[in-house]
Image 1 (spheres, helix red, strand yellow):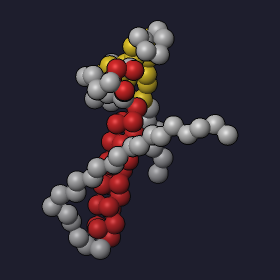
Image 2: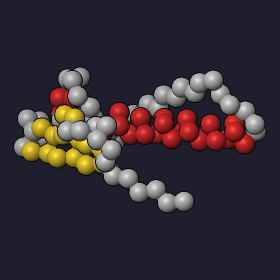
Image 3: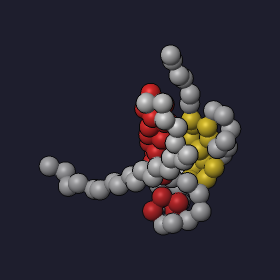
Length: 92
């Protein structure tokens, strides 16, 4: 099996005042705003870390469902939360 999907992002301006928009191939996310303020200051919009977390959580949930199915089990519900933590490291 082969899966090929894409997402895209547009960015204009500098880091702190610039603005971006992110979209997915399916259009579920369509020009959703992101930027320094949404990433570091809690403003409305999305950010790369929460998108990565959502992708990991959804993939894990599907994989667990597949494993359960292999044991003839079906979950009533699978809820997964993936936390993405970035930490600045000193160069060395």
